[in-house]
Image (cartoon, rainbow, N blue to C red; front, side, top):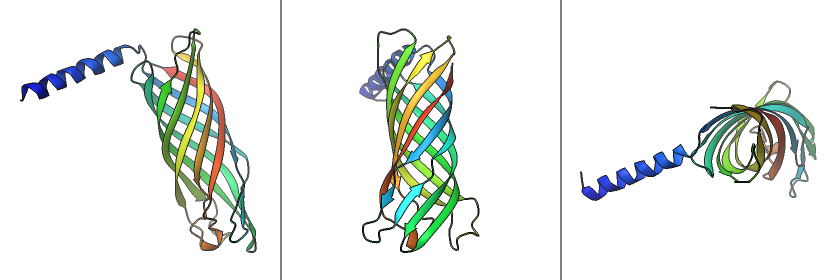
Length: 202
């Protein structure tokens, strides 16, 4: 092996080991209850409006903190709501199970307050809209939409391994049309997702 490559490998290993050693408990599992509020959207060309009902859901995640300031997190969320469409097409209402799968970079913000750990996050993922009854509207089908996610929150350590998390997440994605052309608004919408729950560190 080339000496420079070997030296680089050893240097990277020592750096990574040092970085990881700065975090005593790098892993964290979270369980949160969420509220989901979607912004209304209207297509200028067709005047069709999309409005999703507000709903509650569940968000679970796993995060790993690489060092004092950087980490990564994966989340799965679930809710059920109704996607409503109004316009020249009349009204169509499609109840759907919504599955959220995202991965994010997490920036941990150092503060001089004991047992308080604020953070910011940004990442990407997918929202899967799965109709609960496909016989109500002819031709509808499950649809996956790519999403950008951003947000932040605070972890409050109650004990060495357990605490409470308060978080806000925003998701930006295209309005679903369930593969129907007459429901296609070709518009980007925003989903606000405040949540609160608990975590376990190890």
